[in-house]
Image 1 (tube, rainbow, N blue to C red):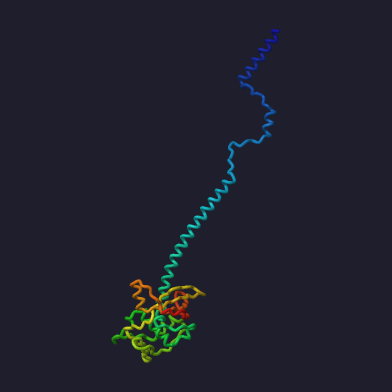
Image 2: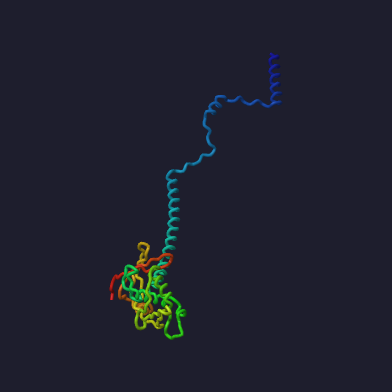
Length: 266
């Protein structure tokens, strides 16, 4: 019996020496638990919250609204700029056309559809008036009092500027009284009185439209004196008649294509 106790003491001593040298042996692993763990799906450390479908819809709709609002704002600004520019350009163009047709209106030109139908005397009258209304009189002054002398070449150029590059005139004396333009075939000039008062009408453009590439004007014929008085006194002027002018505009060059009668007001 004493021998068994001795052996047991020796075995314990040997275990203590092994533990002292190599450390205490780890517990035996639970093989069944490890096998079960191998088949399991590992859980993620952080779970990402899923965005509900309704929230996605509202977010997308909000982005759409913002984009459309930005586009709408840009469009409104652009249209405003274009609209203001259009108003300014139309006013400027109306003034330009009023100045351009003034010689024809002042001479109460007869209606026509083709340039060839315009009487020669009317072409000369309108051409001389275009020069006198639009150029510096100093170029045509002479030593003779109360007259201007205009080269026939200038009259021919003015005719082409009004009625087209194909328009031609036969130079001759036209008009009567204070509005008589005397042609000198030897010097190829026209002599015109300086004090011209024979302006029959002044134009007022009531409407302007664009048709087939041409500008169509609704022109009211006002007596010049009435036109000036009403402008100063803010009185509504009633035209004597209304005509339709068609103007071709190419590269900022205007050509009077036709004149039609619309309405007799007075």
